[in-house]
Image (cartoon, rainbow, N blue to C red):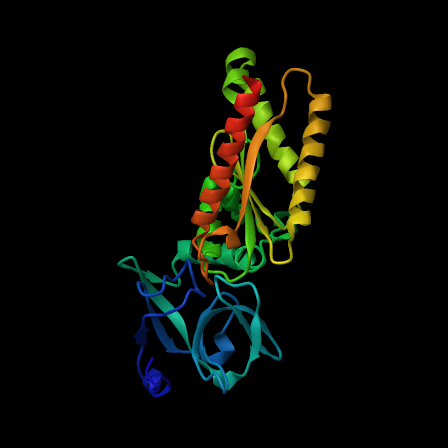
Amino acid sequence: MSQSIEKTLEHNIVKIKPVGYSMYPVIVPGRDYVYIEKADYGTLKRGDVILYKRPEPESIYVLHRIYKVKPDGVYTVGDNQSVCEGPLAREQILGKMIALDRKGRHINVTNVIYKLLTGIWLDMRKVRRPISLFVHDIKSRKCRHNKAALYKMAYSDDLTGLFNRRYCEEVLCAISNDNRNYIIYSFDLNNLKKINDTLGHQCGDRLISGYAAILKSTFPEGCVIGRMGGDEYIVIKDAEKMGQQDIDNDIKRLNDNVADYNDKEQRFEYSAAYGYALKTDVSGCDMHVDAHDVYSIADRRMYDMKRKMKETWN
């Protein structure tokens, strides 16, 4: 970015192509363009995307969204981040975004859909960046009814109430850019088809929703728990401070919860194969690892367990 951007902004709208993933997924680096105009400090508000300059020794330009405006200054956060930066001094702020070119479409920041979706994204600050948090608490978020309904429709599985595949795929993409360690569990129910064929789909649905409840009671709220398909589940958990004993405790807690549910169930048995993998399990892993590769390892280990279980049954 040119060092004369401050001077250019005095009389012109500046078009720039951001780099870095701090504003992903709203702005994709290397693909999207944003339009910046000089900002009147007094008109800045929550949700505005502003261009500012960090003080020395960094002295770099940053494009982040305003999280809150307080008497001591403006606080910002990247759309792919959770930690706020600020307060920013008035003289640090150079301009604000008025539009962007995304996948060839020109989108003005006054666009109703843009305002709605980015508003939801901003409200999800504490949960949207599983890269650094893996923490979400949907119940604690104060969303208006229409925002909550839109979020549920987009990211919730109707039968179980877990996150759906779409959300989990977004999480996998997001954590691929993180430096922290994480663990991914893969689960696959046993005998779902048999239960559907012999006892009916109502019992099959009860098996699916019941195992979802088992997972929710096993893993803390700081995990992403989702349903990836008919009888497949995923759990993504921050493993920065986890050791093998912590993993063993997860499995023991899971088995205890399964046993409790089976004690109450008269018509079928809750049973599933599982596998897990840490980010560090990827061969030759560096700072950035594709989380889909980690998930594939967990999935492969899960199917190894399922094969051994079938051999035991036979």
